[in-house]
Image (cartoon, rainbow, N blue to C red; front, side, top):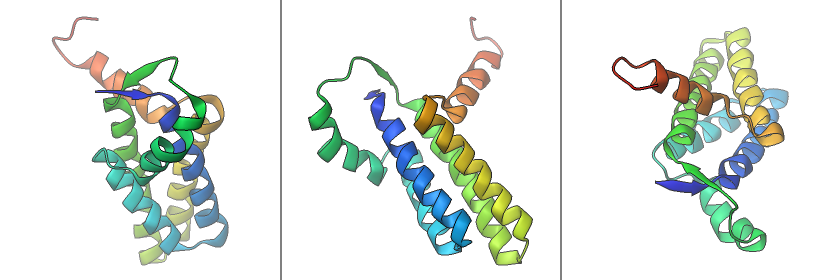
Length: 136
C-alpha cells in the first residue's frame, strides 16, 4: 500500500510535541496516550493520519510522491517499544529509563518532523536488505 509521504511527517510533528510535553512534565499519562497512538499507527489506524487526511491533505493538494506504508508502520512499532520502556521506567521509579526512553522516541520523531529522516523507516529498510536470500 502506498501513502502520502507528507502524512508521516505530520504525525511525527504532532508526536514530537506530545513527547516533549511528556518529557518536560514527566507525565506518564501523556506518554501512555502516545503509546496508544503508536500502537494504532503500527496497526495502520493512527489518529494523526486521520487528522492529516481530513484536515491537512485537502489544503496541500495531491502528493508529489508516495511511499510504501510498511516502513512507517514499523517505525510506529519501534516508537511503541520506546514508549513502553518509558512507561516501565515511570512505573518502576527508574527515572533515567523513563526519561531516556521518552527522549529517544522524541529524538526519532523530531528527526522525521524537521528533516524528513525517519530513523525507524531506515532501520526497516536495513533489516530488509540484510535478510538472507534477498537480492540487493
